[in-house]
Image 1 (cartoon, rainbow, N blue to C red):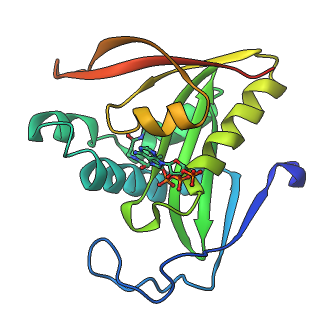
Image 2 (image 1 turned 180 degrees about the vertical axis):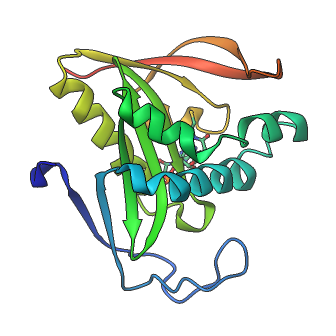
Length: 185
Ligand SMILES: CC(C)(COP(=O)(O)OP(=O)(O)OC[C@H]1O[C@@H](n2cnc3c(N)ncnc32)[C@H](O)[C@@H]1OP(=O)(O)O)[C@@H](O)C(=O)NCCC(=O)NCCS
């Protein structure tokens, strides 16, 4: 991997030594957060961060059935996604993966941050990493299907709302989401 793709967002600035979202102390208070390309061996940690983000942050907008269908992705599917051309980034804090992002074919497919690492600019940097990757791949704009939970986050990052829509998981569970678009150039 090209080292210039690594983004160092510096030291965790907020809540140093305070209590985390799930009651755990922020033991990462002086650790560096590094945004880097994901590797196949990150798959289990990516899967865990994905599940934690959905279950910890999206329950205010989605019901239990939707959360369960959304958060049951197997680790192997992230390996397969990487192997078949999805560009994925992780936010690494010490040995932990605080969140990840993914893009393929001009579509931002994921930006997820673990609840206890939220509000420190990690989501923004993960989004920036996939936008840069899409631009580098030649896309002048990117599209995404935002969760209801992340809609204002994407708006704040310059995304334009196209329309409300519905995504269906393999088991048929429908989840409302919002199609959005952003010009990169
Ligand atoms: C949305 C998400 C990725 C944001 O990650 P984060 O690391 O907490 O966000 P950041 O700290 O980078 O925030 C960046 C900016 O967006 C704002 N922001 C963050 N989450 C927001 C939200 N849900 N609504 C509105 N603004 C939000 C922050 O205040 C910050 O503003 P600033 O730049 O003016 O300070 C994270 O909350 C998440 O994983 N949500 C659940 C999963 C999800 O729905 N992902 C999207 C799937 S399509």
